[in-house]
Structure formats: C-alpha cells, structure tokens
Length: 174
Image (tube, rainbow, N blue to C red; front, side, top):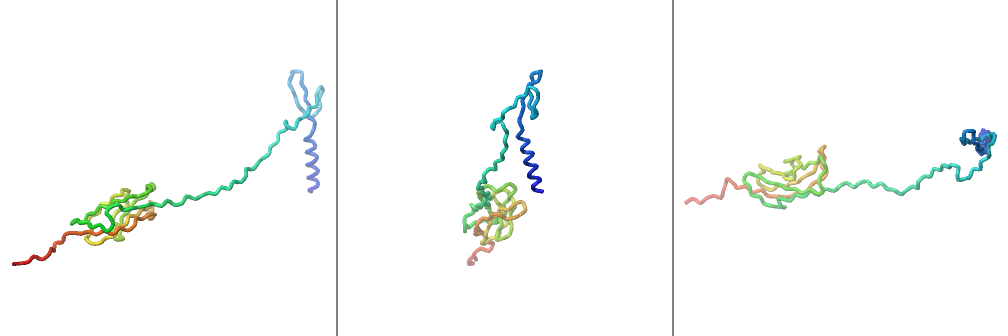
C-alpha cells in the first residue's frame, strides 16, 4: 500500500514539472499552457518566478506570566493617638483613618470597638461614635469587600474614655 502511494506521488510530481508554452492569439492576447499549440514557444521558468510558501514558526520566547501580587493596603488610625485619654461626658468620639493605596471600587470600611462591629460599612474614613462608656477601649478599622470579606485591617489602637462621675468626692460636713 505504501509503495503504491509513493509511486503515485512520484508520477504526480513529475507531471508538475511539465514544460510551459506561451503563444499570442489573433487578438493579441497572451496565453500560457502546458500543451503545445501552433506558434507556441517554450518558456524557461527561473527559480525566482516560482512561488514557494514556507511556514516559519516563531522561536519560543521564554515568557513568564507573572501573576499580580496581591495589593497590600495600609490602614492607619490617625486619631485618636495610641493610649489617648478622651474626656467626654456623652461618650462621643471621632476616629479618623487613612488608607493607602485607595481602596478598590465597592470596598467599605468598618469600625470595631472592643471586637464588636460598631460602625460601618461605609466609604468615609471618618467615624463618629456616640454612647461609648467610660473606660479602656480597643478600636480596629477593617476594609471589607462587597461580600463582607475582610482584606485589610489596622493595628489595634487602645484609648481611654473619661466621663465625669455623678458620685464626686465626699464633701466634709461641718
């Protein structure tokens, strides 16, 4: 079977090397053919007139696809300062936050006081708290995605809230 295929390919390829004839008809039109005609002359084909198609594969480049490293967000509580003492009888407190780089669209900030979600989610970096009882508190700000997943947090910040007591020092009676 292979031998028959090889012989038929050789016969076909030998036919493709046939002589080309050129002639001009009575209207002055030039014709080409592989069959000789009256007044036809054989044309010598130069090697550079034959079309050759060669497919060159580009060399494989050593391209390494680098996955983008996850962005590290820095969330910093700018005020109040660490171990700040805040005196407010109403228990009101303002927390300012800075975030670098800017959070992606749809992300929000939440505020936890003593591990309990107190404010958020919000896009503003200013939290206004009220009703905080006196004593020591730890505040943390988290950046959360739209589905609620925390992807960045600030360092815990310890603060002290002082309120005037109804029970003052005992007065000396005379």
